[in-house]
Image (cartoon, rainbow, N blue to C red; front, side):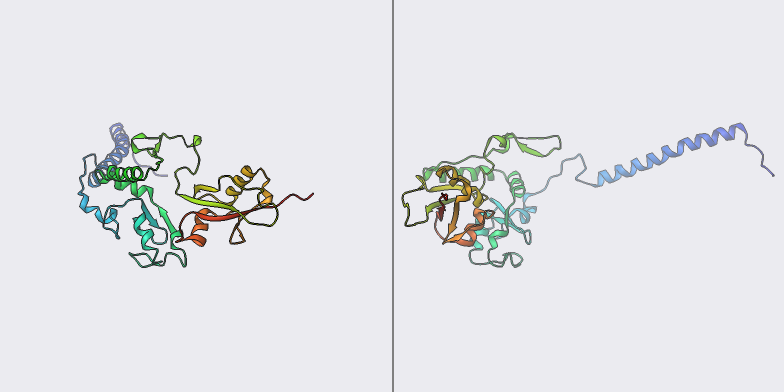
Length: 274
């Protein structure tokens, strides 16, 4: 078998040096390419990027009132966002999105609305003084009517965790789970019957609770106040027994929408059999 002449010692050293330099050359080219991309991307650039607020207005201004979002609320069907008060008032006479005209819901469009807290936080950070002005208006509203206001944790009280996402220092484990929800006023009346009309009467029949509270929660409250067991208590609306899983929001939208507060419910207590 024929073989070529063996490489001389200088040639071998040269080839070995080229082999070690080749990966370094590739790494250098890759680094240069990444630096070029880094400089082209303003979001990755260390230099400050300034954007005029008017360039963002189309994304943070309500289509209905032409003002910045307050209590930003998004339609889940099309993801268009409006002020909460604007879209709720609009949907009293329509069930279509005011921007794209898509049908939100066949009968109850308010069911497909969702508060967009991320969008609202963005608007407050972008528009100077907006959050302070809104807080002052809310404070004046409550003071003029002699009402107490539950104040939520402010943005100054928030810190960042290890992932960089903000969270408040408020300890929710020590508070009620539904404390900062929207609330609904209820009136719990005993269903009239010929027997024992004065028995199992609530001393305080007016209740204010979260719209996420369910019928089963109210039944437990009734059982505690009336000192009876849950199977013996039933909640009714117009003589219709209400399912345990129904929320107060669903109940209001399907049975009491447009009527003045409080929402009137009836309860019945079945006596134990002897």
